[in-house]
Length: 230
Image 1 (spheres, helix red, strand yellow):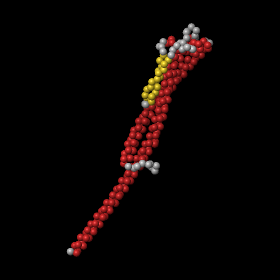
Image 2: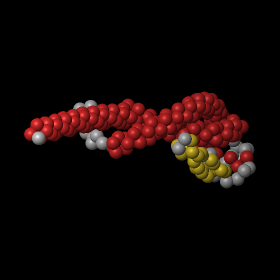
Image 3: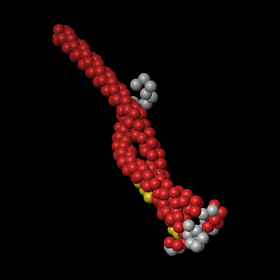
């Protein structure tokens, strides 16, 4: 209380009570936001773990197919077969709002919709395992893109959760207690002032009463002396 530097007036008390009410409302809203973000974040983390396991498993399959294909073909032949891709991909990004967090949505579109355009070579001089590897890689690419999208969303939500947590703690442990302490201090000072004012008024009343009694006594003595003289 000794460190409080505020003018203890009723206007300041009213202002601080309004500030406290706003801070408490903001604290509740931020706590609700933090809790909902945490729920969304945990759901996202579980999705990341599941999808990452799928992607890693499919990438192992792709790696195995390329390994078999490289054993059946020379390195020069494989490099030549994959040197000039026929299919091009366009990546677009939009966002969606999750509890005021703008998370990305990645989408890619191929130049053509033909499945055969993913093979940049003729089938006569290549191994069937290479076809399997290229096809599997094309399919896992979509999951890899989704995995990147979900991981980025989890990262952004984690950052927002940390910011919200700091704000909640600042309100809960600093601003609200300090404001409540200041309100108690001003209330105490105003009560002291009211008691002091009441005491002064009672003293003034006693003094006025004493003066009135003394004046009445003098008037009575003066009247008595006039009566005796008569």
